[in-house]
Image (cartoon, rainbow, N blue to C red; front, side):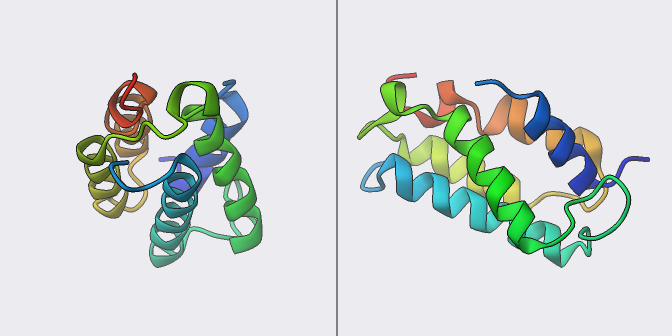
Length: 117
């Protein structure tokens, strides 16, 4: 079974392109919560995982930046969508690749988080 961090890393590589919270603040908060959860799951340093916290921060910041592009999300973050995204990140089941796919493909999408969708 793929470790969660390994799946995050794969999805970061594969991905091309909040009421009261700016897009930049949402991106930073999502990065912090994602990497915090991976750290809680002890998912740094192994094969297919982020090497360390700095690598996680860098790559997931880029992922969220591409997921919520400025031209579609600038000053248009959905509080409800962002709350649902954060809830999914914090509820991630350690080592569950399907959970990561649900977070990225369902709970934290541009359509849900960007108020303009």
